[in-house]
Amino acid sequence: MIKNIVLSCLFVVCSFVSFAQDSLLKSGPMVGYSDFREALIWVQTTQPAVVRIGYFTTGENEKFTNSVQTTLEGDLIAKLTPSDVEYGKTYTYKLYINDVYVARDYKLEFQTQTLWQFRTDPPDFKIALGSCSFINETKDDRPKPYGGKYQIFNSILAKNPDLMLWVGDNMYLRTPDFMTDRGIRHRYRHTRATPELQALLGSVHHYATWDDHDFGPNDADRSYVNKRITEKTFNDYWGNLNTNAAGNGGVTQHFSWNDIEFFMLDDRYHRAPNRDPNQDKAYLGKQQLDWLVDALTKSRATFKIIINGGQVVSDVAKFENYITYPTERAELFKRLHDAKIEGVIFISGDRHHTEISRLERKDAYPLIDITCSPLTAGTHSARDEGNTLQVKNKTFYNRNFGIIEVSGKRRDRVLLLNIYDSDGNKAFDYEIKAKDLRYPRK
Image (cartoon, helix red, strand yellow):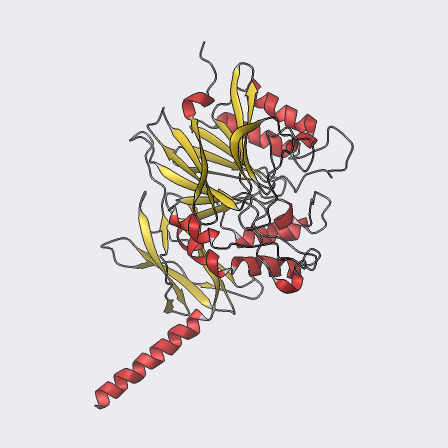
């Protein structure tokens, strides 16, 4: 009898301790980058706490990361790197706060990169993509709610992607947020804690760039006085492999996944104002443009995917499309052609609808831009904006996301884009073959 009472008391105490630690979790865990020898896991607590991750594969004993103390000065964020790993494996992981296991009711997994080079064909894999994610907060929002259908995050997870590309406007700074570090971090913190988002964060590797709304005010440019604050906040809240790749500030990045290289651009930090009448005004800026062309020239990836917040290929000379910065856009296209860079595909967001743009070129393969938007932000009705490069019947005007399936042998890789609505119903697909993104052989 006494033994049963003691066991019952222990159970109650353990349950209370576990619940207490669960209350210390603000958001995450989120899986960031994946590499061969480590991955990154991001966690945010509600108050200062000690965080660590346990991880294992089937048949292995649990291993642990170093413990990280979250602090108010660090926005209560912990970044942990499981590093006792092997190539090409999937690991289950557990979250511990103050040395107490904090269970989640969804899977927590990360994977390491596969060492296929000089050995096999590259593995098949899936990439999720989306942009424009608005999470409502009544006291700060416009009178009519702008965000909705948050179930889209569960629909993305149901497609089992390996990684997700966040293409910009991944959250929306509001009027009370723009001018202080406290305001900017409030918005990032509020968006990241969205309940419907947590399961997606926990087992898919996430990479992000920004556009105007997660950089600053609407249509923000290099004049935004707090751009260094938002740069720091962005880097704190995402787990990208690198940042500031061009070396002059901003969130430009580069990473690989199997046989694809990704070039995530920053279309805000160095951008001249939209209203600047100078035709030669900067969009990416010379240093970032030079870095991009150099990195593309060096790359031997099957597909070279360039991710940019705004549309690159569309020929609609309004909104914030690249063509409204005509000299720099023309220079990029010319340098791609002059250097005979093969395999380039653009991915963009911003426009609150999804479309494919295709620019045919003389003596060169076509330049294709996959615009995928929005995730949860507002939409507009179907309309002809004047993009003469739009691919017929490859448009969608409701909330949506994309899944890219990459498959095939090394020299015959195929990229299949599928666009789905918020509930995971297919809207359309579009196939791109690697062999069709090569220059004619003489």
